[in-house]
Image (cartoon, rainbow, N blue to C red; front, side, top):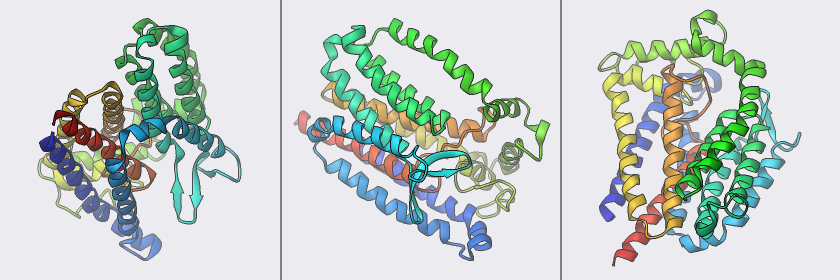
Length: 365
């Protein structure tokens, strides 16, 4: 297990290093033109990384049994924060969505904390109710209520993509805990009308789906971003145009250091560079699966599964959006995109994953 722990740490640090290089490459011109400081975004990202490393070390050193006992306060705090962020004047509104708390130049997104809190709470709940998990009232329904509350509050922000992400994480944990497949199917069937309304009756989401099918129908409007992303990927070729030589970052591709940083990687480092990033995530998943199988109890196993599902979903969605295979949704590429709450809590999640390996080593001895 020590070898697996070293492998996971090496992979994550490599992804972070790639992110640091690519953030500077893709943001320097934006920083200079808008803020007269070419290193503005890099310096903020490094500050987030420091916080992220503190969170990762803290979650690695923490006693998982203590974290398990704190699962209820954590989920309660996350729900309270998700309620508070919806209050005008408390939560910060940007682009028609109220998803952040603002503390000067720092923004905190409570939905990112809610992901970790929900993973830990559900893992504790279903491992404690292991014998009742197939019972609708005493096993499945308590988990469903918590998932529904968190997902519903995130949808009110509104943030449908993160809400779907949270729902998927929650239902994977519940399914692997042994819940009835018929209960899960029934839940998804009941939720389909809500999903239909959110996707097809909300004008801007319906517009995103239309543009996803044919981005060239509005080349200067809603289709502009994805077209520029595709141009960046296609112009990179096999080896790329060279580090720092991207053309699409020159105010063509909006915020190239954030959600669309993978497009700049593809343009500057080419197919080989983009593939290397994908391979690193695949290796992280592979090592994570080994941790899941080595975990000595159900709680630790389900926490590990939840973390892996969270990271995998965000990688698939981000790269899917950047490559035009999924409708546009603002999710960062874990460990690589410009920092913030997402980066900090992804690193905290890796600390928890490594914590499981530490506990497994103690168990094996």
